[in-house]
Structures are given as C-alpha cells and as structure tokens.
Image 1 (cartoon, each protein chain N blue to C red):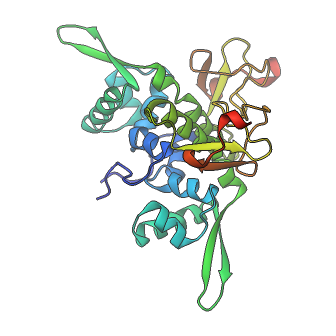
Image 2: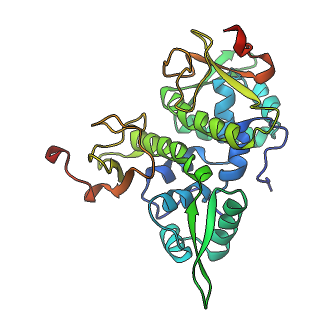
Image 3: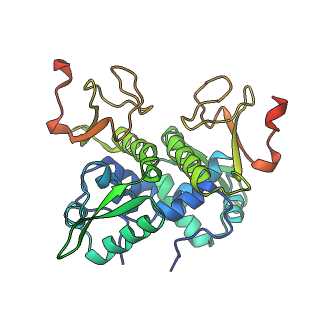
Length: 155
Length: 155
C-alpha cells in the first residue's frame, strides 16, 4: 500500500499534498468553508464513516489547518473552524472548483455558484468578483447550489 | 478500500479531485510543467514504480489532461505534454506550492522558485510577477531549484 508521504520529494507542492492531499481532506475543508462545522454535519455532507472523518479531522487539527473548539459540555461536543492557515487553502479549492466547472459541468452548468456577499457578483477564474473586481475570500463570498443563486439578469 | 470517486458529491471540486486527486497525479503534472516529458524522466523524478506511473499517465491521457505523442519509432517511444485542459491546472499547483512554501519551507526557505521568463521577477501569492505584475503561466514562467535562481539583489 502506498503511504501518504512523498519521500525524496524536496518540493512544497508535495509537502502540501502530504497535509491536504489525502482522500476527503480537501472536501472537509470545502464544507467547513461553506458553513459545516460540526462532526455530524460534516459526516452527513460527505457520507463517509465516522472513523475516516475522525482520522482526517485529527490530522487537519494536528497540522493547524483546522481548530477544534468545544461548543457544548455534558457531553462535550466540538466544532471545527478554519485557521488562517486553513483559509490560505481557499485559492486551491476555488481553482479546483473553477477547473471542474469548466471541463465537467456539462449542459446543466456548474452545480455551485460562488457569489460576492458585498455586491452579488460571481467569482471569475482569477478568484475575483466579476462585477466589482474585488479579490474574494471565504469571509466575503458565499457558495450556493446553482439553483439557489440570484439570476444574473436581476443584478 | 476507498475508491477514487466521490459518489454522492454533486460538486466540481469533488469531480476535479476524481481526475487529478489521486496520489502522484498532481506531481506528474508538476514535472510535465517543468520539462519532464518522457516516461523515464518522470519515473526518475518521482521515484515510483513503472506500473503506478503508467496507470496515472493512462488516466491523465484518457481525461485529456495530458497528450501522448510518439517521438521515436523502433521501438516506439512516447512523450507526455500538457493539453490546454492540463495547463488550466497550473493555478491549483502554484497555490499548493505557495501554501507549502509559506507554512513548511522552514529556515532554508522555499526549495523551488518560480521566475517570470520575461523580466526575472518572482511569482507572488496571486500568481503574478512581483516585478512587472504580469499573470504567470507555464509558458511564461520557469521553476528552478532555489539555489539556481538569480539573486534578488541583481535584478
């Protein structure tokens, strides 16, 4: 079985993939960015086993990509929030989204739309708002299922 | 064993990861971008078995991320080139590079430097040249081991 490290690769891309390249890790981060912070929410969204999700979350917390915070006691329950280091992976995710949209969306169009909270513009391929030009980040953009986004003609 | 598809995920990020998220796939693309086009060059750079490399290359060709081109007959030998669809993944790789540089490079600094061929500037976190501001792509930028890059003070 192949391990998850890339031995002999003195390269920041390989190092990044050792941290977030494992199966499901980037999709966990996607869900945290779009508002799923609790274990059960993440499990429902991803449809994976508790043990796989738990293992990925532990790894992301250990690498300071996510922060684990208790939101309830008796019993203790935790939520997961993106750290600054986690937020810095937003461009990786958004370029994967853009690429998937471009080459795999098909006739029905992209399944999700990224909108600028400020002005309602959509994110372009340079991760900027196509209306006002502002660079978009998780704090200033929302990801919606395409069917729920505002029609283009009304903006 | 977990498969390589993300069933139930109606999402362009998940779709992209089905195509290029498998172990080694993005590092193959990295090497093609930086000039390794032949099977033996790729195998030497990555240090993986012929069968794993062959399987990943076949998948990337099948998905039109790479193009397979014969450069020799008797015996037939092939090289692998990035298609436009492959080139469109450059921002994903460069943001992974930037993130790895930022959080894992350590005291010795980034192992690789991306330079603008036109003016010798370095790529910034928005994938633009830090000297002239031009957006950089594989056709206009080169990736060097840090020790071979031009000293900053000479520009």
